[in-house]
Length: 430
Image (cartoon, rainbow, N blue to C red; front, top):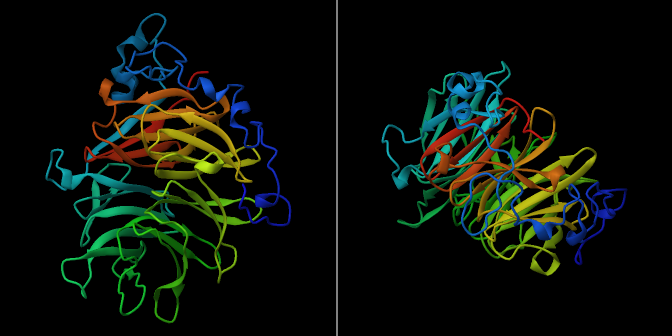
């Protein structure tokens, strides 16, 4: 990475990562599962035959098991059993329309996150274009809370018992102009939320809509928010005022910041993806100063179009991060900022996250603009293992806007106003 600021002390951005997938930044020789990524468009197996020579999944999931469990799959009772895999089951298909129904554009779901409380109860939060965030009980999938904000919700983040919401709202100083607002709740006392304000003359979080947020929870908690104007703001809790104060701005992006993620390797870093087609790495260990440790662009194996998603990926003792883009490519970066692998997906990427199947194998879950959810396995060269697609009545019929992964499950939301929750039942067959 040509503009790296190298750090001392083993690992991180101070030295190459001896990753198990080979290659440094030479992604044509990457050994993710021993496969050359120049072949990433080839079909790995039969399965349905799509158009435009789309890569085909090598595991076909049983539609009946996905929708209703073993009791719905009559083939499983026949000699030889079912020829399709019983690895995932859809445990929730929730309409997030607040009773409005249908596929109205105002109910498009833009954000999702999940939370386990101290008693072990799991709750899923969704944020919609209609300005509502909703909390769903994962046992009954009943709506337990419905909060209306002043405008469209773009992002939600939950951690350590706190929920942060980024949304559009009116500014009192300029009638008719929406700005980026952020509000947070302590879920143990949701009646007293915190508003994020840049200053008294600017009583909002960003001058334009807030697209993403990320919490760093430690001895000195911080919240990072990214706006359409290209700014990243770092917020800290101010005990004197009982609210969040703007600590500093991380400046560098020149278009909207679409995604944020935390990454730890020889230090703590914030990753940011942007519509300016760059991925930036920020050193955030210093409470008072946040510096850009590197920028990844098309000039150093980066993306050709807007970056829409970024997340960390751990493989044994090696740490990576993964980025997705409107250029339909997924890229894997090692802890020194080198691109170790590039994988072309079957469409523009809007969301991604990393999880594990019941065998402990890493799986990257990818949401596409056509509503498909792809499941790719890193240790098999990011091979397309399976898809969740409305072509087979088991997926979204609108763009997948956000994903989140939990313990043995993952959630997807999209333009069809739906929250779908997928539970791992068994590993994907090898």
